[in-house]
Image 1 (cartoon, rainbow, N blue to C red):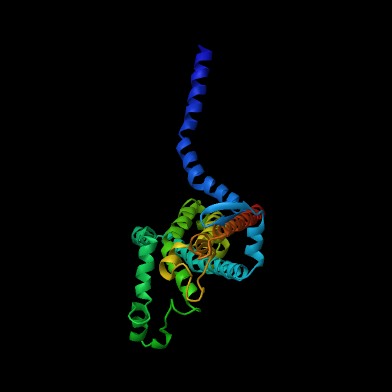
Image 2: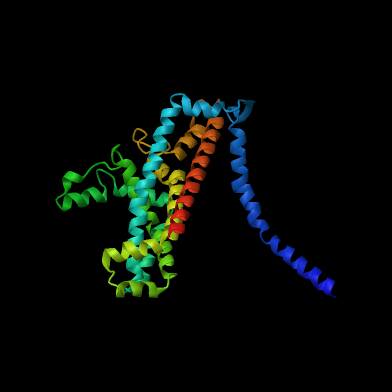
Length: 308
């Protein structure tokens, strides 16, 4: 009887793993297989969409050393970094401060949480279309508002100027993700024992000192998660820029990023002899950049946590 019971428990334990099978299959089909395909494809030359001969690392060498590929890659790579830095400052910092405000017992905080999160529910295409109308230089609401309040000298073609186009799109992206980031920080604050905050206030901590000495150190895990997600999102960004500026990242490639460059290499080049191979090489490089940076960020935050 003991053997039978043991056998049934063992069977149940193995049956539980079957529930993971759908997730494993989906991950394999939509994540692992495309990644492995990109790695394999990057070592071949292509005739259109037909794989040709094995070229080893030639696609990577071409991407990194030959013009115009190198300059285009570096330009897009720089814009991805700008996207991350500005997005961090314009989304995570305000989201953290808003989380603190909502966490303090203000009236209608459930309403504010809902309002801030609503943009996250909108389609990227809808967001891009709406802000394209708002930022229209001739009939856009923003320029009209600036002129109405006596700041007409600030009105300009926000998406048509190489100096403002990328920053404008990053701020739009930050607006769309602000609510999600705020909820992550808020959930972290709500998981902390309230007696810690009360003790800090009794000891005289208040205002900015309370934020920097208590709230920030106790929110490092949330900052780690959101910094990593922001970095990954910044280097994977494609859809919002594509919806607002097209595949070339206009004007004059001032909003070009690695995602758009990959799209043009793999699917938009007029000369398709090596397009798929170069695009796959770029995809592999992009994956390595994201993986390496994520590892460094995790190590940094874990070290900070250990020091505390």
